[in-house]
Amino acid sequence: MSTLLAVVVVFALSLRLREKELVTIFRLGCSRRAIAGFVAAEIVLIAAASVVLCGALLVGAAAYQDALVELIVS
Image (cartoon, rainbow, N blue to C red; front, side, top):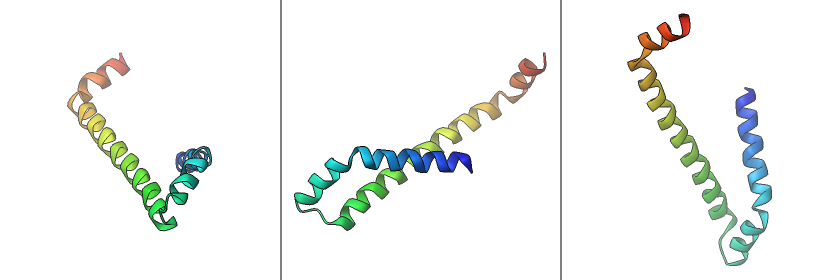
């Protein structure tokens, strides 16, 4: 739960830091809905990259699980 809250805080701070950029995009004629879509796409891409990275680490850990357990125990 705390990890999820940390991620939400990071994205909220990111939006605050990029507020001028988002206002510029809006002034150039982009709708609020399109801007929300850009932000949502960014969140989805980051989540997808996290899932892929986590999956790769899990596969790697599973391949070396015996050696890792032996290293930790000894």
